[in-house]
Length: 155
Image (tube, rainbow, N blue to C red; front, side, top):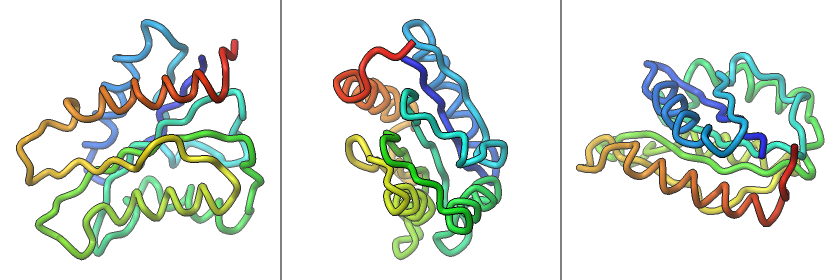
């Protein structure tokens, strides 16, 4: 299966996690990690699974690298019917009111354009005791398993 791990980051943590997820999955799949700032929403492909890894910045906003992508989703309104994605958020619950606001916004934008979310939106808490990888790797495997049933074995 083709998998694109798309990441939105401000300080680089989401990028590092996205690359780790890609490395974890590449033994059995064609996987590419791509910054959302380098991905055009017009290039979504229904035969590819998209794993989104996104942090939150400021007052619950999207990080800098995800903002141009979100703006294009809103302005160009591509039809994402048939596109499947999972989303993994990174944040800090010390900021209770805005915790994981960026990933929530990103998921809502994708769904509003017709994409289908696989599984729940997972939120890693930087104030917690778990390492992001310890949550992200099983999450990614679960989403890939769901996609195997939904998308099938694309070349």
